[in-house]
Amino acid sequence: MRPFHMSKKFTNIRGQFYPTGHIVAMFPNEAAAREACKALTEHGFGDEEVCWITPEVMMGEIARTVGTADLPLPSPGTEADTVRRFSHLAAQGHHALLIHAPHHQDDERLMEALHRHGVSHAQKYRMLVIEDLA
Image (tube, rainbow, N blue to C red):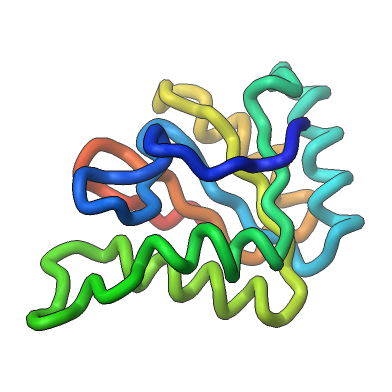
């Protein structure tokens, strides 16, 4: 597991957080997120496929990408609302894992590992679709 660093590869063409081919999973506290990371390793996901997102990073670097997404008109997508939900949970102390999972067949195995560790919210970013997983 490595710390998350914002880069253009995690944004859409409008500069909003949109890590295509990744799952963002939120956990109620740091301990639960760390245990979930261990479970991912046991389920075959390597350390290089998982990034740690602290509440501070979520509320800072990631939340900033929303900017004025809804001005002058509401955004046609859900990117901004999704980041706002992540930020709301982060403000309550939730930590997140960003997991590289480009293949649909990995999702079930991955979510099985995460649910045992109290995942509070999870989203899969696909091309043009953000899917609720938990």
